[in-house]
Length: 213
Image (cartoon, rainbow, N blue to C red):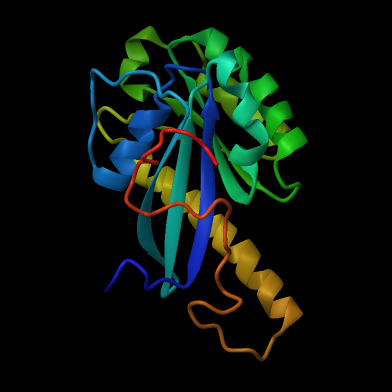
């Protein structure tokens, strides 16, 4: 099946402090790779991968940006068209968990009000250095209407599950809205079933310019 054969196209963004492992979550899910020497992302990059959900082909375009303050100018363009977000912190660095509140506010301010958000405690392989109790993060997620999972991009624990879960949740919301809007229409690729995103970059993996828009 060609890369252009899909029923739905969903843009999902990765947000969180620099160094929490966003880029490695992206590479683990889209290429099954992990780079121990990965540098902080400069600007924006994205990669795609298609999965099957209830017999439909879902093409996910996952966007990753730097967590440093000096790249905040890309905010509005980065969130435009996003239907899902993974809000990532490092379970071994409490400060990255504290900053989740600020990231959540930014998400609420700039993203669509119906965006699906998952709180992700990454680096679960560092459980011996844990600084954020699982139960505390789980409670925070519940109180703020987020789903929650702990992952490790290093050993691949729950990475697949995290993306599968959020993409399935988005699919169910979108397909239900379509059913309510037009219960008798048959969906086909390229018709109303595809959520288009902006900007329309190439699908070759990283944005060659290293910049958004």
